[in-house]
Image (cartoon, rainbow, N blue to C red; front, side, top):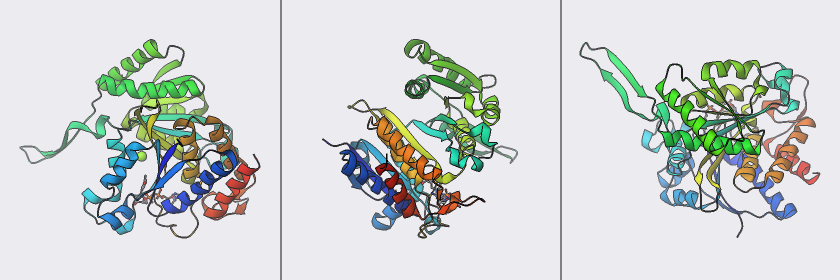
Length: 367
Ligand code: NAI
Ligand code: MG
């Protein structure tokens, strides 16, 4: 049967960028004979408007049964005053939690045509291609005890707990080593084993997975604060970085800015292997619903299109087709086609959301 894909466009610019992904999906069907069974459904504010909940049980069940989920973005000012239990982001959190997506993949890849956009000197980022793997379902954002307590003297204390089990560390380490084998065979693990017990366990368990299961992959360890420095000083020294939820949150945002615009950044969240051997997976752009530009045809669809490229590679074993799509995006950028967020002083050819999508499809045609 055909590979199956659940598309959840969501809110704001989500549906606008997803419309461009649909053009790409149609192209793969028509020109490469790669046909996906695509279902589309609601998430976030759009689902709340229709059903009074940001994710229905039916949609959740569909997400569990398909090969991959592709999500646009959720949220917007219209929903800011809603009760926390039905806020749009709860839809996304439910997907991540129930699919148990513990490995968050955040590539930081520099398109040469956009090297001027980096916060760093072009020579430091040109050709950059690294992958940060962040543990997504445990650690200090979830550990118990947590809360704000009032002490006998009336002062208050805020408490969060960093807690990692052996298995939580081992499974995300495996995700990182698997990725490294498909890339340049190097993993750098980051923690604070110098001051945190969870960091000591993290280092020991990552090393254990390496020694017992992935001895062929080169493994190094770095303290996360030193890692932050190295990431900005000379990012090309890294291939795959694996780290916990908190450090990964910060390091992946930092790495994102090495490469420029939010409109270019894809992501994947992977869980345990399914019966077919491929991981449960949700793909989404890093950006949000961008209410400030929604409905104006200004959104850059590249982040969402590149998220689909990640789906081709990691959920459908179509690495060559993923590379073809990434090259098409690169060629369009090299030709100077620019959505508003990518306009530079020297100019370029201004493009709307749909013109950018059309240009990428034309580049695919030429590939
Ligand atoms: P945002 O990522 O939506 O926008 C930040 C800035 O980047 C805005 O100026 C926006 O116009 C611009 N931008 C974002 N994506 C772009 C694209 N593809 N092309 C061109 N410009 C783009 O973050 P913000 O403004 O903090 O949040 C807006 C809403 O999105 C909120 O409701 C927030 O909760 C939600 N959000 C949802 C996320 C998700 O669905 N995963 C992630 C982040 C925020
Ligand atoms: Mg963050």
